[in-house]
Image 1: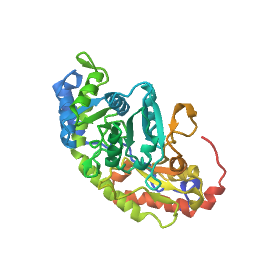
Image 2: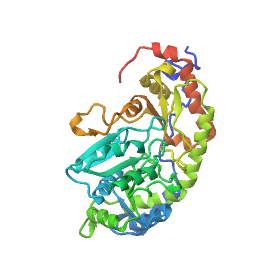
Image 3: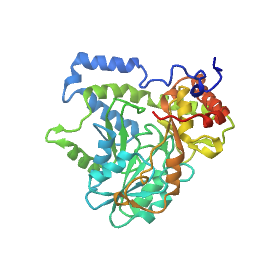
Image 4: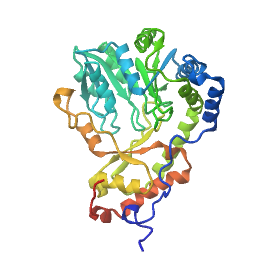
Length: 390
């Protein structure tokens, strides 16, 4: 009979036998909103009450005059770039460690991504690397707040505007966060939100854009419409589901932030090769769609692949981070705006904890730390375990 104290990957009992919590959580307010939309008939209308109301509520929540909803966060990024008049032959500067769809969206417009290195500590876009990457062809910068980190977006905007370059602030992973005292998505020329199925605000699919500039708002609105109809809309039913979630977002973000502090305090002193991205900087408060960690395989004594597999076997939703955008791609697909050592380090060494467990109890969060401690305690046995694929 196996020892139940062993890691689950070695035959022991998992720390969380039921596995990671399923997202989205059951929500009585969302259920009531959807039921009311069915009763009123709004669910099947072209122009019901909920999309217009949600756009007004998003604008008020973020303190901006204009918000537009659309079919996805990726669609929102494209609309933002088009509002900034990005087109064939232009260049768009972005971090070499970022969401792949942003990179591909730049290509879809006939423009070229210019990849710059990230900050060595936070693995966010580093404003210090921007100006050296700019050319006369530079039309825009995309800056994404990732994995619980925050970009110094005010610095990004100041640098970009000196060169007449626009800024798309991608807050898909950070709705309700603040940076430099402002809500994320409101310092750049255009802000972007996502309502994808795993996001903190979820409707399965969907996105939104935030504007302070009425001209940029009108450009995006015109592109998203074909005559009277929007061709990539958010539905009334999706908007109905999002409205109660938006009202609860500050409280949910505060709960996740407190649980991140609990988790960081509960993590074992060893392994020293696992350190969270939590930073109290840029006058901001983060939102935790993912909680990012720097992972040092040599310090822990396990490859990232085995560590992640072992933690997931304990019922904890931990994954490797993004694949860096310059890795495995033809150099013809991008221009490097300098050396990219920190983005390469993020490619090799980022792990992320998915957010649902951060909205549960402190006991649930401590189970994450318990899983890390157990895997580290048996690292030698796990390292010697024959590896199988699949």
